[in-house]
Length: 480
Image 1 (cartoon, rainbow, N blue to C red):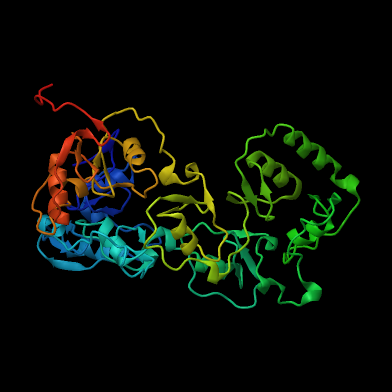
Image 2 (tube, rainbow, N blue to C red):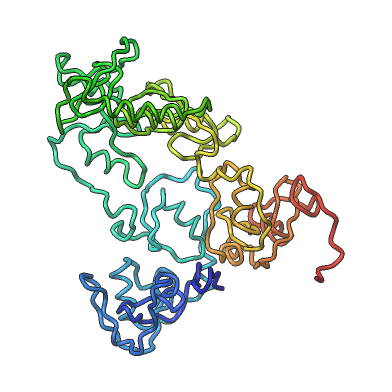
């Protein structure tokens, strides 16, 4: 089943005959080619022998059009061994067996239901090009798709992550509030995460004063008197202490005090901007470790002294390790949004998982997974499959119904065929006719409720027809 947006497929079946594109690239199937090259005018080449991997690629194979199908460990059938070798070179899969893939067996693989207690052995690069936190998460999210672990060079998000760094570079302060030996190590440590370098003043670690007290950077200038200072970099600082603090550890250039008249044009420009700031309170933390009432006031500071947003929410001091909670198992699950943009199961989980970092709880709208909590959805039927294996009428309703949870769109086959494991041999129809179970959860239709009973060995029954909290009359028939 192809789910299309216009003429471009969003999802392709796991098997299909490989085709040679007019761009000289071999694709897993014609659907795969249309999906990857949507709108670029690539068509199927008249001769399969014309296919040569793109210039500069090490995967240079000319493949004949002989039909001698083989199955790869990604669950896809390839026209012959040569075409499989191209994919082995490009993605890092392996030969599973001779002959076409058995699609049913791919869906009967042993798929985990939860990864809560599984070891975090990631990041793991999957043969689908995505990065996963662990092997368990990869199997859970790609159940029935034949995705296997492969070399991380095949994953875009880890391609630029260095494994080794040179010594002797200048220390770098990360936006997570941690001091690193250098910028390279900061990037390597946070591969795949949104951690970037900020002014040294943002890191309140004692490590940064290792150069001796004489050269130590000011840690805090909040108690210093306000005495606007013009720096040789053209920035306006609250006082000389702040100028030294914000430029501490920056080897690029030394900033000194100059005549204030040189900063007058910038001050005039930024002051005009401040007049437009309202009284709305939605605190944000600047990379100068100061809390600003809202984004507008931060923008004024950005204008004056070239700082940047560190995170949403008030600035905090780094917590000592002994102050961080060790066990959150008894804490009820009440999802919260962290200033790093991630959703945590509870405030306790946030504090434990971000121990030693400047991450605080912020309003839900700052996390993508909770941004649509109060959204009014159109009810349009553009069915999507959620990562919780439930079918939703559209993506908007999926996000709204899972407010605060990390539920996202996955291939439709997971909802339609993904329940063929663990002895639950049943394929549910894709129509949306919600029922409320006695466990308080809404199911896409009665079939999915039965599947849940099979998977969890529970005794959930239908409480009433309709969404939980919104009972409707039992339909008399399904004729329209």
